[in-house]
Length: 235
Image (cartoon, rainbow, N blue to C red; front, side):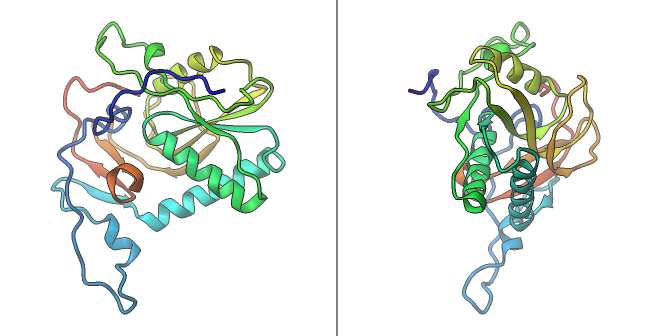
């Protein structure tokens, strides 16, 4: 039976502000004429009419990055035996589910997947105490003795991952813990490094990285934007 925490209604950008910055108003993808097949090209889905933003990963590039990460997980864990994927809300959960689906394609058996809320373990609660709890869902087999792969969309300061390690201690004692991220933008403040990276993206400290996923944003893309506003949290 899954261990659950209260799950509030979805708020745009919940769980993702800070590493990327607070999200601006949702924009509409630019429409382009479909090709001969009647379908728009993959690149067109990642083009957004948002002044100050530029696309750094297209949908196809995100797909290939996740496929490569899935292969690397299987190689490092000898076929995925004993692997549990825990996504950090919000977008890390959807990325974890995609990785589990790819592992199932390659091995025939999906890796157990769940979610891990880090809210109560953040080191800035006293500075910003008003935070909505997200969902923690542990696969039925638990995490004891497993290889847990934490999955997040963007790695920045490392503080979210430190909070995730503390939250994981409340759930059990894994044999080992690894980290998979879609984007590593640098500027680490803690000695934390990802084991699996979709793209290393050099950024200025005050720039924002915005990850969009089809499941909640309507399209896949990674965007690099203008400097973040004062007071936004670090991750």
